[in-house]
Length: 591
Image 1 (cartoon, rainbow, N blue to C red):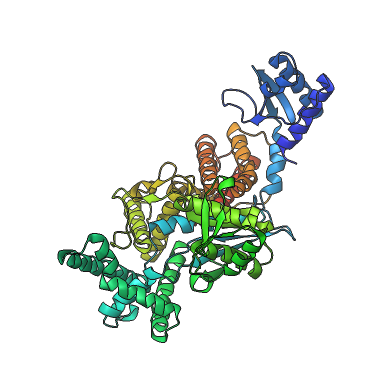
Image 2 (image 1 turned 90 degrees about the vertical axis):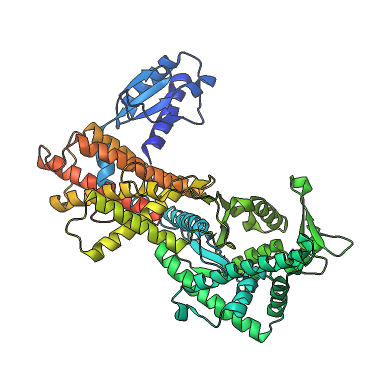
């Protein structure tokens, strides 16, 4: 039982025995720095039930706690706040219980509990991954790792958008202008090569539109009648009909893209347990249209189209099948969700990592699945996130103005290298060691900058700012971890149990911060927010640096103090490492 739970029970008991009132909840907050105390009981909310002067009520409860709770040393009351001081022995016992636990803060999955499937990335196979995909991947991967650490079994997945007109545009442009070039013949990653032809299609399409307009067609008609677009549409029909040559080209170019994606995912440090392909899922869901019509969830209009009327739920009418019998994206998403539960029967919920422009789509999807009677539909979550902007402005794939994910990762490593060289911190490193470290720092900077922000907020990403070695940045936290490793190398950590020292204020503050980690992991899982982990880790590092500046570790007055402080430093480092692991960030042993 945590200190807060123990105190909560005892405060309720104090109020019952002193005032004959049963409290349901007790409100706590951190004690303000200017007052003595480790945790504060807020008296004001009790005044609705307990009549009297808040200071006197606080005094009564404080005296009860000192008398009945071994860990309570003293108290003081400031207005309506009861500041409780905790014995050093409580913190020392806590520390000795967790100091050798390398996965402190993490919980193992409980047998029999339902798993969660986390979907992220879900790219189109007509272009490389870009900056927007980077935020998506980092968020989805981190949320999956946090859910695992909080005790949930997780499957990581993506649905690859490998079919449709946009894919045919790249295929057609390569067929027309590619001269049979391949990733091998050009030295380009496959996704980049295919992406170049997506841009090429747009360039040729615009030329044809202009030509038609010059010959007297309206702009609207020209956009619809451009020969290259009509040919792409015809190619899609051939693909859907299974025409051999078109399908062979589709498989070849998608294969190039998958090879390219694999390299990017590896460089980014994300992975997946299972993959779904839109080419296999786009016909799913149609059988449930029939079921929905039978149960009255869907209605058929006179033209034969099928709709779900959600007006009573505050939404609008949503089409689930066109008049010609073809499915829409919503139908496909319904079918895919159901298929996933069939494939993984232990899944009881799903997290969809998709940008906030799709908020309404997921509101509708989740509601329809509930109406269709699926129990697991109440455990669906849209991890909605804001776009990522750069100082240079908005990105457009078809115009080739995106920030390529691979280029971004390389640029981050280079920038980390330049800054590290300027600071002169790498004496004695071989060139290979430097390159590994630059990548660790650069990627850490990128990931931390993206993940420290609440997912719902839009980000203006500034690469230079993210690699600052001071402030709330990845490199600052990595540097603190490396500094602790340097202390540990000099000190040789031993495993002696130290339980008879008087804690310095800075040691106690550090222990309090460490104590919060398991609760932060659970809250981050409940809120699907890596930002809680990122900002907790930064607070821990600030607390350690304050401790480091005020307390001598290796020059302690006696062996017990030195041993305790070295062990405490080691536990801080382990907690930083665990926190960063949940963000997908590595920590360097030297820096």
